[in-house]
Structure formats: C-alpha cells, structure tokens
Length: 336
Image 1 (cartoon, one colour):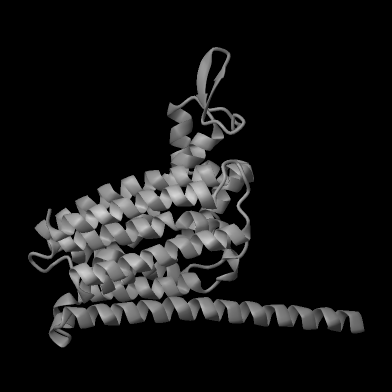
Image 2 (tube, helix red, strand yellow; image 1 turned 180 degrees about the horizontal axis):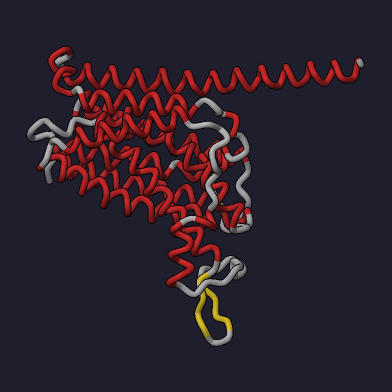
C-alpha cells in the first residue's frame, strides 16, 4: 500500500466513524435539530476537515494541504447558496421539520456519489486534454460575471416548476404527501413515491447543478497540469469536496434562519470565481510571473479568504446599519 492509498484508507475510516458519531450521538431520528446541536455539528465537521488538512500536510507536504484548504473554503462558501435553494425545496413540498435531517443526509450522500463521478471524469479529461481548463476558466469568468451582476429581484427558483420535478412526475407514480415519513407507499394496490423521495432526488440534482460551478473552480485551484501530480490532485479534490458537502447538513440547520442576512456573499463568491477563471485563462503568464506553485496556492488561498470574509462581514455591517435606520425611522414615526 503506497502513501496515497493509505491516505484514502484513513479518509474513508474517518468519514464512516464521523457519520456514525454524527448520526448516533449528535442527531436523533425524527427529532428537530436545535441551533445548539447544529452549532456543535458544524464545529465537529469543520474541525475534522482541518485536522485532515494537517494530516495531509504531514503525509503529502505543504502544497497539497494548502490546495485542499483553498478548495474546501471554496466549496464551503458555495454551500450557502445550496442552503437557500434547499429551504425553497423543503417549503415547496411541505417537508416536516422532523424529517429534515434524514432527507438531507440521503440527498447529500447521493450528491457525493454524483460528485465523485463528475470529478473523476473531469480530472481525466483535463489530464488528457489540458486545453479544457481554458473552457472551464471562460465558464467561471462568465458565471462570476452573471452572479455579480444579478439583481435581487431576479425570478426566484420554483422547485415545482423545475425540469427535475417535471421529469419525475412524468416517469414515476407520485403522491402529493410524505407517507408519514416514508419514501414509498401502497395505495389501491399500487406502489407510489412520496414527496420525501422527490425532495431527496431534487437535493442531489440541485447540488450537481452547483457542482458545475464549484468543481471547475476547484480544478482552477488544484494543480492538475503538472505531470505525476494527478493522483494527488484527485485526492485533494475528492476529500475537500466530500468534507464540504458532508458539513452542509449541519450548516443548513445553523444558517437556515440567517442565510438571507449574507446579502453580499454572492458578490464575494462571484469575484472569487472571476479571479480563478482569469487565473486559469492566464495560467502561462501567471506561471512566468510566479513560477513557484506553492506561492500560487498561497495567493489563491489569501484571495479567497479576503473576498469571502470581507463579503460576510460587509453583509453583517450593512444589515446592522439597515436595522439602525429602521429603528430610527420607527422612533421618528412615533415622535410625529
């Protein structure tokens, strides 16, 4: 067993033990997850991801560890957009709060399978046809521009009008209820799929749509061009993605009431996507200017942290200013 295989083995064991611990001790079946529980779970998954980063640094060196941390931060921040859409899906299909945890877990596990397939194909294509990275770069610049210029008044996503739901409705027998917490029910001698089943499929499908942005972005952070580094690159992309997606469940419960407070986070994410896309397009000149790959990763990591952290703090500042203005307006109305 070589070093990379050993890391995969350790990673697999850690994930299985962590899921057992999370579901067995931190969560209870068919129970509402409190903010306190969600906070503990979020700390648990973030701490685990950071500990694995240290382990990766020890086993593979500084560069892969920094790439992993940058990719993890990128995926984690994009998860907040997922949460907003997840809330819309749960609301549209009337999912009971006691079923949130189970439905989220199954949807996220399916999403991980899809992402592994997507990453495997993506990395293989990049290693065979390196020019694909330029397509990814152009796509990220375009996506970032669209995200940055999007208005708050743009049409809101409607889960029941989505192509995924219409396709399921067309090919599967569905019932308009949750079957008292079941995914399939028997009615009039026939088997039907419930709204909970529909929601699980939609969560996985929506995450895959988000992965169309996030995985190319991660490929722009991780070195997929250097010969002989492909195995390590795949390891970094797999592990950072899986840790970020597994932490999405606890992050959902922690942020579902405050996700709309981060009004400027999409702008910060957009700037990061444009930066990574531009870096991919100008890789030749960027490497001539800064030939050291580790320094390149440091620059990417610093840029991501500044943009994401700055947009979150600016959102909180503007939200506080808005509350002050509303309070002052309220006092003015009372005075008159």
